[in-house]
Length: 411
Image 1: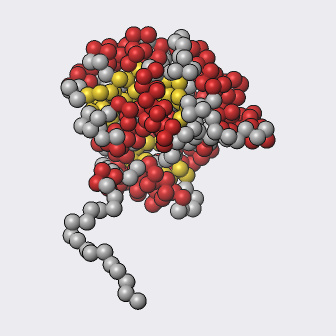
Image 2: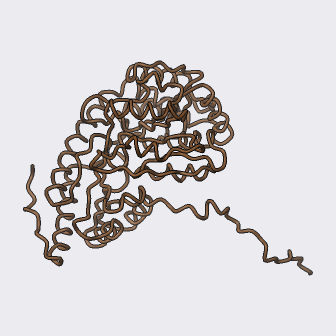
Image 3: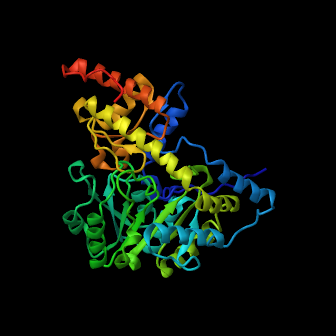
């Protein structure tokens, strides 16, 4: 039997498109995969609450299943959930969003990031992204055909973007500024003056401000300040938020976007082809979270507050200097005193002492010399992880002749 074969040519294209092939894998997930394959590791790596979703929220999801609410919802999401979100935003920002025209429910805040970049960008358009920042932002800009323009933030300025750096970064091709405060990975927050300065920059340059505020309920010093509280920037703002962090609902995969009707309508158009709608039971659970979950959010926030002060104290004491984070559940200590690169420090700490952290370079080039530690784990686990980190630092310093820190004691 004769078998026909296609002619082989040297001009055959690769199976994977070049943009995807050139995209580096997530530095966070790489260390997460290493942790999964090892025994006895204490992970300060992945940013996921160690709290389980509050039971009454789970019950609402279970009840939706028991009641047969298993069909698709509107592409925009359950109207009841969008109405709850509108009330939540009005209560927390003072501004009212139309639940029909200005709010879209997404599969986590991550989908919302992808949607807004695909909505805004033509090939070659630029988005200003602060460095360090969440690993997905520059990658999703690239996948949407845009160019991420990264500006460095520095600890001496509280890891906040400075106006002069923003002014230097803007060009005729700039379409948007992407921000995340409280910040992942630094834990930095913005003051009212800083928010107003950024809002002025955005409006003067006629840009879209994409503000990922998923960690805003986990703010520890002063009242949380949302960009949505500034009426002047309302028509330039796409606000992103979600239930994963403050409500401990990571696996439910639910977020939302709020913004001008034209942008939300365009995002919804992409969403309806790519996703259809988020899981129905998760949306019913989120209604319950917004209605009755405030007590648990506050309880978790207070526990994170206790942990952030504990871990910051001990990292600073052992010479891994860091600012006390003002929000989220991350601390970003400098490891420059060890003489190791971020990658070397993280890999050797995992290999030698079974503690997983994320190298700062996973969040951008200016993260070199830093590591990210998540304190979304129990105080007992943090205590043991810090003992191991101190032993690692002490071992390294004993080979370089540097002075070791005072012994580990509770603050």
